[in-house]
Length: 78
Length: 78
Image (cartoon, rainbow over all chains, first blue to last red):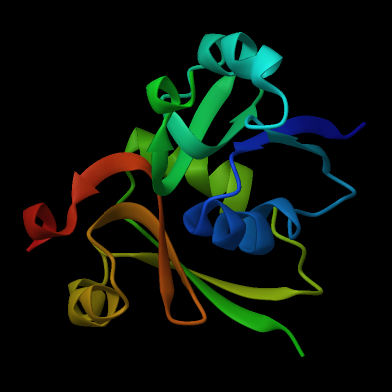
């Protein structure tokens, strides 16, 4: 069974790099990757925050947040 | 042809999480992942620094550094 991985971003250049190198490149037999653009889906900000996301781009995998570099803080997207 | 991805870490708990979720999980048909423990291979600190690594755990892929969360600064490993 594949693990759910949610990638949160907001279209920033740092986000695009992270999306290309990680979100698009995880082994699809291991991960079911969902890509969420928080600018387009602001209703998912609370869920990202609950997952421990402080800034984007970030993944939430099995309840843990993994921030990749720094594009923008979650607070700035509200 | 697969892309070279170097994962630098130093055995910290944050590093182990990142290794499990990313270094071990990138699509092996796309990436040739090398895992470098900078505690065991301090001679590679300069190379990591040249790749733009400021803290570990981090990847360097195609000349760009991707820091995943924060385990320790590179300066603290010298």
